[in-house]
Structure formats: structure tokens, C-alpha cells
Length: 383
Length: 54
Image 1: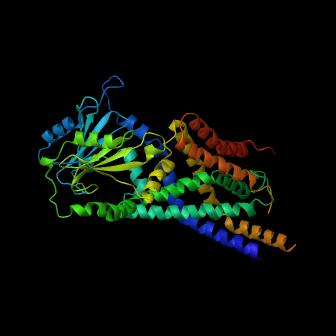
Image 2 (image 1 turned 180 degrees about the horizontal axis):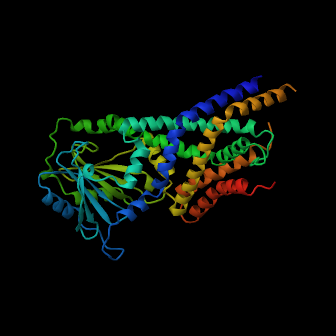
């Protein structure tokens, strides 16, 4: 019987993809729950007390903050500067070298408006992991860097297949039932099957979106790597052979910021990468600017400013796959629609946990159950 | 195939998708619409799980 054969085939996919990824998904759901409120929890556990200043206080000159940082660490190199658009802070990153894995990379926190040093943090490697930092490492890569990212990405792919096969199976399972029927008066496994179906189908789109965008996020390292060896390399090839600038001879950072802002009116620069940083250009300041509408604030434009002359070199166009990656972030994190959206994200996450656990339960009690079920379908089909 | 199987799941799926995109593309009223849209599938779950007519 072909229908039964096809149901059995989908069922095989649903069972095995789910079983392989379930433990990982449970971990992801549990660690993801506090991460939804990561900023709030971090701000609450490690608060920064800012001076009370009028709202429209202009930002201080970045060069003054840089000078203070250099005076404190004369033997070190500037790596990048983060200009927060949420809190009034500027973080200046420094390390003895610009190698991407320098264990002594550390940050100095300044007040964006007064330019005063607020905190001189020890190197990231020597800081105890914060609660949110721990959850994030577990959630994003199991503390395994790229291999962990790729493994969890693969689990995400299995999860997406299991949702799709689950949607296909919903049809035959609900053939004789009204939407949302929960047979609580009969066997316990029937009740859990009905709940698994109801919760799964009602949250299917959310699960698919968060699952697929999670996979996308796990691919960010290879995607940025691809960009660097293609577009970025092509752009920087014409400078090949030129000496890399000494940090003593660089043009003003504040001027680079001004140049980028003039080139992109209506956009906000949030990060400035020093020449020589592995994630930048050897010859330019690389500035990341984002838009000011809900959608465009997710989309960053890289701007290259010549590190010697301070002239605008280029506003770089981002490839489609990096745009897709940027849009995958909010849709995975749920951080784009205020606190109510975060609360909804948490509730969907809890439902997902119930779907996962009920799925495992149904697998444990499977034998009796599905044999009966398949027999019934067969009997109906031949009747 | 039962004709009554798919209409509600399809509707819930479309509403969820609308909610996810509304908050991404707009602000103000669109936030409220997004919150309302995404509350709906959860409300349906709660209603069917805990307040089933027998």
C-alpha cells in the first residue's frame, strides 16, 4: 500500500532525525532561555553606573580616549573600538599583538560623553566567565569553537528536517480528529501523542524559523571567511606589497569616524577596526555602520578609510549571503521587538521543550502503539 | 484526506509568520500587531491543553 509506505518513510525520517538531535536541542532550548534576556541579566549582574547627564550630551572625541588607552599601555597595539548605541559607553580593545588569538586581548571602558575611563578590564582570557558568557559558549559552540559550531549547525539541519517531516505526518495522524483534540480520557500515550501534535503544529513556523536561522548563525565563521578570501581579498589586492602602517603614524580615529558618517548620512558607526587587525584591512580603518530603521539597523555596511591620509576609500557592498546572515540574527535571538517579544520567545522556547520531551516519551512507548496505528491505516485502506 | 485537518494549522502558520516579520519591518503599531499575532498560537495551545471541553 503506497500511502502506508510513504507514511512509514516520513516516519523513519522524523524518528531518526529527531532522535539524533534531541539531546542537543534540549541543551539549546535550556541555554537559549536565559540568553533571550542576556543583555538584561548581564546588566543586572554587572551593572555600570553612568554619570547622570542630559540626554543630548554630545559624544566626546575618540582620540582623547585612545590617547588615554595608549598612555596606560604604551607597549601595546590598538585592535578595535566599539561605540555602543545602547549604553553611553566606548570600549577600546588592546593587545600586545594583533594576532586574532592573542590571549592578552583586553578592553578599556570609557564614558562616551565625558571620555573618562570607567573600567580597565583584565584580559578576556583571565576573566571568570559570566553566567551569560557560559550559557552563550555552550549554546553557540559547546566550548569547541568552529568544530562545535559546525556540529550544532548539523544538529540544526536535522532539527529542521524533523520539523518538516513532522508537519507531513500531522496530516495522516489527524485524519479522524478535530484540530486540537487531546484524548486525555484514554491511554497516557494517546494524550501525549495529541499534545505532541498540537504543540508541534501550532509552533511549527516559529520552530522552523528559529531552527533555520540558528543553522545560519552557526555558519557565520565560514561565511565571513569566504567573504575575506573573495571580495575582501580582491579589494585589498591593489595594495599588495605596501608596508603596513606603524600605529604611531596613523591618521586620527575621530576623523575616520567623521569621514564615514559623512559618507553614510543617517547611519550609525558602531565599531572601528584598526589597520592590521585580522578582521580588517592592513591599510585602512574598517568602520561598521548600521541603519536607523528596525530593518536596516540589522544591516551593517563596512566603510574603508585610508589609515594614512584619512580619506574615504570605499563603502563596501555586502554579499547576499552575509545579508542573509545579518537577518538571521534577530530572527534567532528574538531581540527586535521589545520585551514582550522576548517573553513570547521564552514561551515558544518552553513549548519547544515540551515537544522534544514528549517526542522522546513517544519513542520509548513506541512499539505497541505504532504497530496498532499502522495496522489501522492498512485496514482502513483495504476496507 | 480530511478537509478539516489543515485550515487551522495553516492559519496559525501565516499569523506566526506575519508576527515575526511585522516587528522586524515596522515599529509602533506593528510591534503591537506582532505581539498579538505571536500570542495567538500560544493561546490556542493553552486553551486546547487545559480547557478542553469533554
